[in-house]
Image (tube, rainbow, N blue to C red; front, side, top):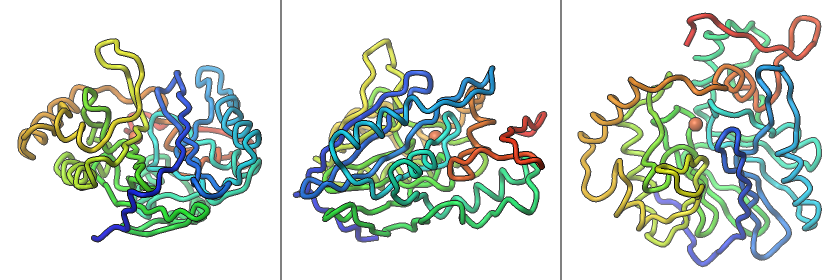
Length: 293
Ligand SMILES: [Fe+2]
């Protein structure tokens, strides 16, 4: 796939770190207009209390209003398993189209079964405004963005590239963080390795913005690196590590990981583009399938 890379465009990137879920959300602004996009927003959930609030999303919404920007896109790099998306709330406040990779249909099929969803739950991605295929382009103001299909962590993962900035989702982490797990349904360590190589085939100076950081070894939280640094220093794939090394390491590591704290609510909400499911009376309600994951 030949991607329309344009390193001459430098979008303004503003990061928002959500401490409870270690997620980094972004506002990305076209340098030549007031248009912007949001990448991977967070809706706040107090799971113990079943309480949802929008403090994190409001920070981004307020910032966009304060800067007088027009929100054109609300992008999900994938169906997150560790936080809830605030996409519908943000869309209601500011407009914009919600987009995700077309692999969402596989995720909906898989988890539609796990959560025993009825026929009213559509498995065709129709909850989203746009479904991206590998190489699809879209406009943020005058800037042409594109999506790269990067499965392995999940079947719906896409890396989104805008000028010299790429938003990696969970395809890879900061060099000292390595990579994300590949053991969720539809995940595959070998496929993830190939996707990471695809990202690392972008120009060396391409800025890479992470979706998560956990501050390994107690360092401060960080979210920006570039292709050259990842190629040289990524602890899971950098500096000559082979696919075989990676698959062996990743598979062993994943077999010891516990489930993310918010996976059960996250999947139910995020596979609906961020809408909370409802019971037969229309009340927002989540399920917990016992021994289903
Ligand atoms: Fe993820």
